[in-house]
Figure 1 (cartoon, helix red, strand yellow):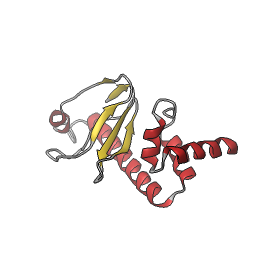
Figure 2 (spheres, rainbow, N blue to C red; figure 1 turned 30 degrees about the vertical axis):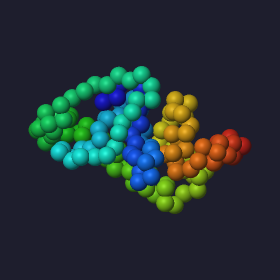
Figure 3 (tube, rainbow, N blue to C red; figure 1 turned 180 degrees about the vertical axis):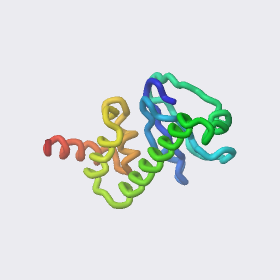
Length: 142
């Protein structure tokens, strides 16, 4: 569990470029995969000084369905991750840059000034120049 700080998850695409896939903030469970013994190609990087609460995955999962509190936490994290992944997929495929930016602000409140903007642009699937334009357009609407 991320107690303090901000992290990002990213992959390297076929062109050797980093693609930010996820941001983690305080209270998030930082995990590459909920499926044991599955290799994933995502890297997790701290963007600030971070404090983590670490648990043994196998030990925690051995208590699922035996301990209601642990079961509820794991279920909540699965649901949160599923919602974020679905939202991201719909966003990348269907939304304008402005709509993607607004969705980012809703999903990651308070992170705008804690994350380098080129990572935000990368996450949104736009260039840093496009992000600058979108931010200007967004501020003019407010």
